[in-house]
Each structure stands twice: as C-alpha cells, then as structure tokens.
Length: 359
Length: 281
Image (cartoon, rainbow over all chains, first blue to last red; front, side, top):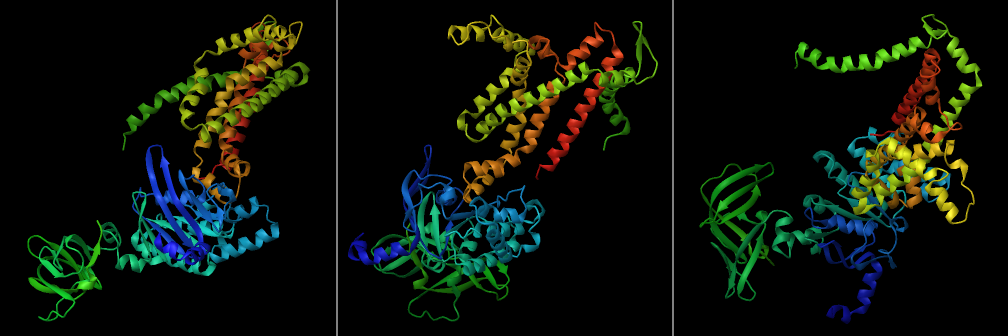
C-alpha cells in the first residue's frame, strides 16, 4: 500500500502494461468457496502458468477469464476494458480445451475456420488465415480429415490453430498436454513454447504438473485451496519459496522444522548461524544444495553434518541419497552419479541455501 | 466358451418366437395378397388382381395419400413440440430437469383409449372446448370441424407421439459434450449460431429417430381415426380392418398391408442410413 502511494507513476505504468487484471476475484458455487480474493496481473506477451493441485481453483480462474462463469465478487479487466460483464463470444480471448473439444461433424479445416466464419469474415480472408494457421501447426495435409481420425497430438495442434487463427489477445490453455503420453508431452511442450514466442500471444496456461510449469512459464502463479500462494518466475519460486507448501510443491525439498535461538538455527542434528528473531522456524533445503564434504574443512558460510546412508536411488546423471542425521532425522541429498556408497559420511551445504519459509 | 448345446438352447426361444409370431404371419399375409375371394369363399388362386384394384381405385390411393399426409403432419407437429422441449430440458432446465422429464413420461402410462376418449370430451360439439368458446361469445354455435376430422386425428396422434419424439432427441442432446458448446461461444458464436452450427447438426440422429417413430406409428394407427376421425379422417389401417372384417376381402386387405409394410421398411432403412451419415464418434 505504502509503495503504491509513494510511487503512483510506477503503479500507472504497471497497469498500462498489464493485459489482463484480476481484481479481488472470488467465486462461490453455493456454499463452496472455490476462489478467494484473487488479484493477479498478466503482462502482454507473457507466458503465465496457473499451477495447483486438483481442486485448487486454477481451472475456475480460466473459466472466469473465458466467460463460462461469472465471478461472485471482484472484477476482471483486459486492456482497459471491463471483461467479466461481457459474454464469452465478445471477448478477445480464445481457449484450448483440456480434451480439445473439436467439433466432430466438421473437418479440420472447418474447425479452424469456425471462429472466422461466425464473425462473417470474407471467404478469401478465411482461406488465407486458415491455411496460415494450419501451416503454423504443421497440419495442412490433414485439412480435410475429421477430428476422430487424428491422434491426440494432432488434435492438440488443431485446437491450437482453431484458437490462434482468431488472433486473440490472450490464449487460455486448460491442461492441454495432460491427455498426451509422456514422450509426446515433452515434444509438445517445446512446440508450445516455440509457438508462443513466434506469435507473441499472451498465454495463460493451467497445469497441475510443476515440472511443466517450470519448463514453460515466464511466471508461475501457485494456487492453493482457491487462494494465491505465490506468484514469481520459475527460478525465483524454486530458489525462494515463500511457504513450506510452495517449497514442497515445486521441486523436491527437505523441510527442516526447528527454531532460531540467539543467532543460531537448530533443526534436529543440524545447526548453523542464522540471523532473525528467536522463535520457531522452518527452512527449506533442496537436496541438490547438500554435497559430500571433500575434506575436513568447514569454510565460513557453510554448515557441516555427519549422517549415515540409508538408501541410494540411482537416477542416471545424478543419484538421490536418503541419509539419517541421527535421531531419525532423514534428509534427501542429490549428488552427481559416483557409484555405490555406504556407511557414514560428512555432508556440507551453504547457509545461504537454507531458505526460511512460512508455514 | 459356451458349449454348442447351450448356445442352441439359449437361442431357441427367441428364434421360435420370431418365427412363429413374426415371420409366419408375414408369410401368410404375403400369400393372401396374391389369392382371391369368389362368392364369399377364399380361393388359393395366385393372381395380381388385388394390387391392380389397390392402385386403380381412387378410394384406396386417396386414403393412402391422406394417411401419409396425416402421418407427415403428426411428425412435423410433434417435432415442433418435442425438439424445443428436449432442448430446454437438456440445456436450460437446471435443477428442474428430472421433474420435467418425469412429467413428459407420465402420459405414456395412461391408456391410449382413455386419452382418445379425453379428446372426444374436449373436442365434441357438447365438449369442453366448444362450451368455452361459446361462453366467451367467440362462437355462437358448436364448431363442427373440431371432432371427426383429420384435424382431430392429427391433434390426438401428436399428443400421443410427442413423447416418442422427445425421448430420442433428448438423448441425442444429452450426449453432446458441453465443452463443444463452450468452444463455440469461445470462438465468437452467439446462442443462435451455436444452435444452428453445432447443436442441431449433432442432434440429427435423435431427430431422425424421433421423426421415424412418429411417422411409422401414425401411419399404422387405427384407433385415433376410429375414435375422433369420422368419415373424413379415415386412415388406411381402418380400411384394412374393414376389409378383414365386414367386407371379408382378406386378399385385398393383405395387399394393402404389404404396401404399408414396404413403405415402413423403406422408411426405416432410409432413416438408419441417414442416422449413420450424421453420427460422429
């Protein structure tokens, strides 16, 4: 609040750059509160991912922006225009549906042309733009096919072309890759990202897959029980999770519950110098920031501990160790592959990598 | 999996049933249509005379044409009633859906005859409708065309067959994935365009099934014309009935039945072809 008052100029320019703005949006279905007070800006050209478990409300956000649902409270604005009062067919927003929702009685070409045809675009323009869109997703040769004759990946491309041919300001994608098998999924992630760069359209992407979110997004908005948990770039949210939930949901981590007392953090067998007021504290320590200590030295700014190896999971380039620091405190450590280990070892991590998080 | 004896045993009853009560009667009917009656006695003398009579006497062709006209009117009217009803229930009825569905089905539990007599009471010259019209001083004498006319037959058959038209259309509409409707709106189509371009084409199989029901059932109906049709509302099934009854000309009656059967079978065949053409999986 104070920063906004101090710098109205900055606030204004941020509002101008924002393509989509959710202002205190809430959604209730009967007594069930699905979304609570969501405020979120999406910049023009951004790839923003709504990430969350099933039931977190991420799809509801998408349906509110598309216009399939009306918010119970709050407003949605797009490019300076109130959006939530418009019917879906008047919004410059298009959706790629989870199961593609291609029209089964129309050919691929007719599916892609649908949006232009209902807007009474001239036949020559429809022809040109549909060809261009089909070329963009490499589906020209299937133009005459019915959707039922296509594979999942091909249907996905048609759904993308059908949405993008309308030149939306914002493209909504509702778990578009979830119906594909793992290999195709990776391939389509790459294509999706390349496509977004090529057309420059703002993407609002919904997924429950945190790896996918990290690989694709400019920013991730993590939803938990209908509220925003954290909004940040993938690197930022991974390196500096604000809460224990975020730290655990995004990537793997060791959550250390303990306390800070007189400038020292104590979490079970581990302790290291830490600033901050005394009291209970939770730290997130990623498995890959812990290393096997090369020698007996403990350089300043690092913490050492000794632990017994319990399990070792080989994962190709790296391996995951489960180690016991004593008293049943288990930590996961990720090191580069180096052959079977056993017995007790010294481990070391940089104090700066122990990130203090909220409950 | 199952033994041969078991399979034979299981399939025997239905085969017997179909043979005894469907194929044999049809064969008999078919044979009769090529026989003749001389001096009130049925003679097994193969000839085409019945078919010649049927197509050369204007009275038979006339009744057949009227029957098809009535069946077509019933089909059209029950589609005009049944489709909007099914559409409303499937897309807009919300929580009232189950209740309204039951209300559409309930009339099917009431005997056909009872419903026929109900129409007689409503449409008759001393009936409810005429009484009401005169009470309002809209008419001063009973309106005659209401009862004992093709109009009354169409009205009664529409009342009876609308649920049969409603059901397959409703089923077809319920099977349209709702994301398709959302996708259409998302792509810029309003409600009317979405209906014409997405919902209507995808409901055509149900529409065809309903129309076929209404047409075929009306074509062979004989109680509605008997109860409310009068002389001007006589349909082909009534002619068949009288030929098999008082007139005692089974061969001619059989020839007409064969004609109706051929019309019905070609319609069912056509409708199935069209339904296949319009179903997408």
